[in-house]
Amino acid sequence: MPLTLLVIVLSVVAWLWLRNQPASQRKPAILKLALIAGIGVVILLAVTGRLHILFASLAFLYPLLRRVLPALFTGHLGSAGSDGAQAQTGNQSRVASDILEMTLDHDSGTMSGRILKGPMAGRRLGDLEESEFISLLQYCRQHDEDSARLLETYLDRRFGDSWRADDPAGTDDGEARDRGDAGNAAGPLTEREALDILGLQPGANREEIIRAHRRMMQKVHPDHGGSNYLAARINEAKERLLG
Image (cartoon, rainbow, N blue to C red; front, side):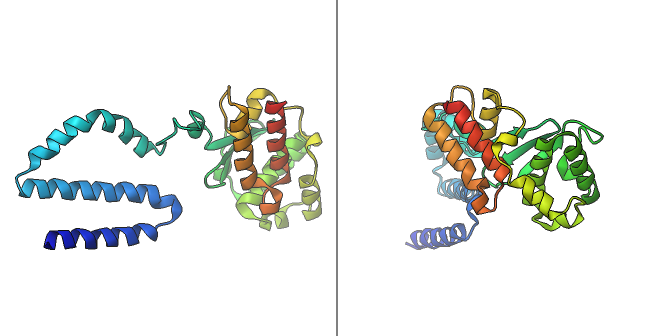
């Protein structure tokens, strides 16, 4: 009876602790609880002389554990379900211009990128100083309007509107760029580019394309504080794949 009471108390404490974890941390928290519970069971079986039961169970469950455990620790349990292989590759989207390559994480909404061309070629945006961003923006405006709009999108998501105070072109010019339509983008998308933008693999079906488009628009739609430029490219990618 005392053991049963202890299990109940610990279960309640674990549940309360798990409920207070941020949504993004609940999966690791569940794994930690499972590990602690497993260690407790092993200790209990060892103390009561029933450890042989655990070994017999492991031998029986080995084929299942061999398949499930790697999926748990890589965060892709169930990826072979309705989304198939798309669940793993759909976590990020890639948008490229002549000067920049940008990646958008679907879960966090965080953008990262690197410079493909120009005096800062090879550097990552996360490593630049504030003054270097303005220099890079001026270079993009001189050589590729599409890259300038993409960099402005990155700066807005990372710094809000604060960076515009240091922009020699002024706030009004930046806002005018962002209001531009998709027709000003550099040429039509290829199928590979459209797949990269939506985070899909070749062969994605209509349902997967629509689901990826909806997920992306929830992250970058202008009504949600996102970017007109990215929203236009995402819409263009959907039209290219469904056309």
